[in-house]
Length: 198
Image (tube, rainbow, N blue to C red):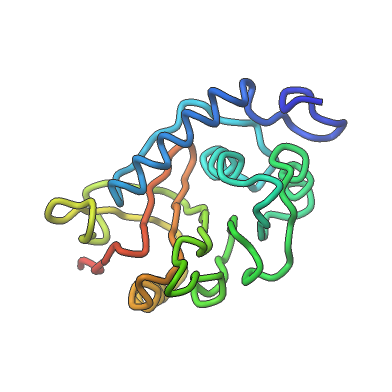
């Protein structure tokens, strides 16, 4: 079966899997290299609730048979991920290469942060939020940002800024973050510093 020909009860994945995944991967690379800059995806899969289109596209692009995935999205989304991404699903956030959170994300201290020798082996958290807005919210700084950048992510849990500061303090270890809302995404690599602007 192909991604466009799912088993009964499953919504399709990308209509054209190869070019769609390539387009999403380019958007993810741009988002990681330019933290906080919102990317709008043009190639989106059909995904079961509660998955948002950008979050579904990101996890389909990143995950494969060699990357364990943790998610809180429920049975329909889990079956969809198994079919379209071929990824193993794990119950322990610490055992996942990628985490897809649609409600409350796990504590940022739980996912694999890599090691001092191999920090690139850390996990990436794909987190759905209610909305992304440029020019408001946090003041971001760090590599990939010329001076500062503003980004508002609606719907994050209380205490997120402090948890992110603790994650960044583990550098070169730490978790990278992809924020998704609707058909848009923005990334916060572990090197990105954020200040809450009042």
